[in-house]
Image 1 (cartoon, helix red, strand yellow):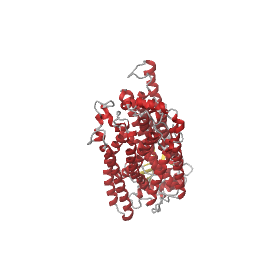
Image 2 (image 1 turned 45 degrees about the horizontal axis):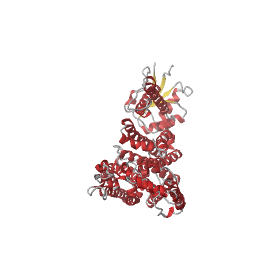
Image 3 (image 1 turned 90 degrees about the vertical axis):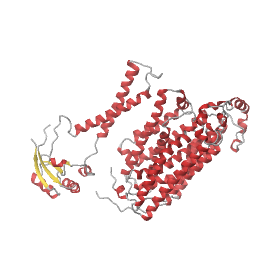
Image 4 (image 1 turned 135 degrees about the horizontal axis):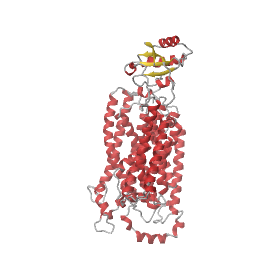
Length: 176
Length: 463
């Protein structure tokens, strides 16, 4: 999928200024592409209007798969393919299977969750994550505005809005 | 987001007449069911000893017929079963079931009461600020402790012989008909320094000591917290943290030993090395549910404005997490015994699983205490809305009562036990009295620790 290449960046010094700025920018009709911060900021998702992550649902589905896989595997091995009597128990001694079932549930849930997170946040091995401004890993908050998405407003208007919202710098950023 | 921080901190819980009335109705229904249970147990079951009890006169004629048969049976069986785990007296009498019920509720509600103090101490030891608004709710559970102490000691003195097999003096007589070398080996744990089979001074002394310590720490922590209301300042927080830390060490030991003494010693031959934790986890989930329910009740009556769905979410997570912790311990105990298959260990589960009286309840215990909270409280929304928590916490409180029922009744009553009118009635009666005592305690003082240094933190708690 072809990605948009031209962005305007607003650089902010302070997290409270940033949070107010997000509200102001959104109120003025500019759509924010993404905000990059050096550390998690409480309540930023709320002002950005992000929906809750659906990661827990993925974790649940992977967990159920793990439970199913573990029980199927053990039942097939221990009761169908090569029935064995261990400790005088039934072939299908469910209590014995619980520890392995638990472990596989946890394993698949956690691996699945990590995998889904990697893919959905573009950290997958074949992904090419974009770095808008390296200072967002140090001491600056960076707000990225996609020019193609906000084509109706015009670049000058967007820069004006960012400037007015308290940005210390407003830069252009283009990717190849 | 602007936070409102000018909350009314001087609120006091008003224990209204209407609330008192509904508690009395609940207690009344409980008492009625209890009496009904005594009548049905008195007329239905196997045989009775002499009908010397007032309540039995009514059906004295009815059971007169089987009296002869019963006497033969008693003479032949007598105490010949002294070596058996179930300590089942062949001559079953309704009073035994009554005493077993007393013991279940004594242990259960004493545990919930001390868990309130424990959870309060945990907040200080872990320097937690989120729960500052409900600290008084936690500590108020401890108001039941003095009553619990008296009831426990009196119940033991009255009914100890019926409840605990190890109280029978003849099992310590070497060479005697009923000599039991396993219990004899454990005898010192009950009777030291006196002779075995006399007066269990060590056992009873521990009970008195533990309740004494628990009541002392409850009073100490409560009073320090109340003085903070008057004088303010950070120094009280540090003092409470110090006392909390000391209490937690003492509680870690005393909760485990009390579980062995009060619950595990019923099945005197049998032992489980994680039983102390198991009982503690059962108490803890029930106590957390009680704290959650009282908080929701207060919130619905307009108190605790600063307590919002974020705090509720945390309480929900505690209930959810520790339900799983309880299941973990339950299963750890079960799996090892099942897998090793050693007769003296498996007898505990055979008594419960291979029994018409307890087999179904055994699985019900797992469903209501694990499957239900696990599935219902899994989502974030369920933990943030009072309706889910109200339903689940109520079921958990009943569920962990069932857990204690399963720990006590098979060992004391054998096949004569079960959940009937007497069990339901006694539970309702106890619960209403406990709630009454706890809420009266809560209503006496300010509902919020108004000079707590972490109040600001609780206002802004956001997850």
